[in-house]
Image (cartoon, rainbow, N blue to C red):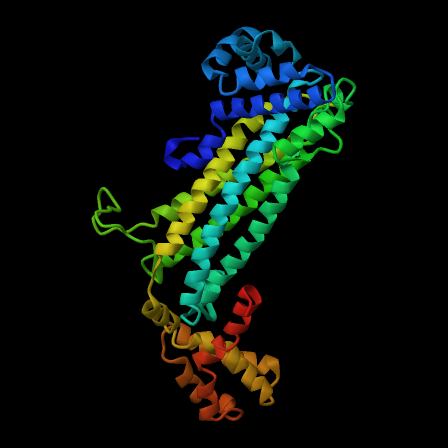
Length: 433
């Protein structure tokens, strides 16, 4: 995490003081449950809350850990310095992973809540701009080459639908990762009642992990980070579209250029797609967390800590980076400058070649074999492609073509409105009536 690509709401989740606050709440809620079960005195549980809440000190814990070489023990030692003799009842029957894994679940769930809100902002921006340009005709491209007409609204609607899917994936991943384990050494509950786990889970907004092996199974975390990686892929797909459309020879859309903004230290005329280029890079960072998360699934027996260092890094880095990227993407879409006239000019840049399939189909409907029709259309298309003249003019002058299609029918194949007649159908599929 670096401040340049961080937002305070997300970084706060991973702050050391916040982490220790969550640790305290887990321990204190466990004490409450133990007290209700008669395992520890109720006075001891009350003392933990009264003397320990908001008292743990990150700097002091770090100092103790330099001696103990164990972060949870350092935390418990610092907590005991404030609670006093009753602290001997804290952590009864628990193991470090009960605290660490449950805390991580809380942090990832809270991070997911912020990311879901971020996606909602992206969705709102995409929906508004898609509706605005529902019938703004532009050229569709396959392999980067002009294909057939589409609309800019349809382009954006496709990204909207993708982020709808990503939102659903993240909601599911949040539910999957938000589990609590308070099961003790090797997960047998030998020294702690399962009712303690249920109580802590309820208080922390989690569900109970059905089978913990002293750690929560890491397939849950792998799915969470894989979902973040898929979302990052969606960000990059849209970012690359904007980058391509902003190229000087295309210039159909571009990022908003702020007053006073400068694009190059050497060339004053430059307006570079710096935000979407940045998004492409940030997406790579988020995706880089996926493979380590997958490799964390395979731990030795009931537990090891090979996953620990990985998660201490990818947890904050992936969520903070994705949070920043989603909000940057929303801003790009909200302020995107669109050039419909340039879209039309580019659409017609090759003299109507984008209508070649319609002519092909019309010829087959009129009786030509598909192979002969393809040859006739292609030979005229290639002349227009090489700048010799108009595609429609070449077709009009081709005796084989005009033998099957009269001038009026030929011209009808070049109607742009034909390509937008089902746009409303697609929008209804995604947005409803």
